[in-house]
Image (cartoon, rainbow, N blue to C red; front, side):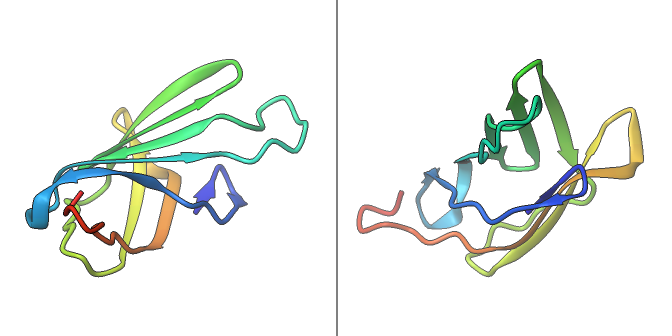
Length: 102
């Protein structure tokens, strides 16, 4: 994942509604290296992302529709008012269902 030009590897956990992968909600903790904008969380839901860090929260939308079909996905998230600039890029995110399909 790349957030504002900073690349990091995160483990997302979450839930969805069965094999169709609808109602998906994934959460990851951002590493805290001690900087003023370090730490926080990233929440992915269907075609949106919310990044919460010290000092604020940013709501983003996927640049293109996201297909959560069990295959690894690449998604670029942008500010709705500035869609030409990628704020968050998620690469190779694979969603695996647990034993209870969530």
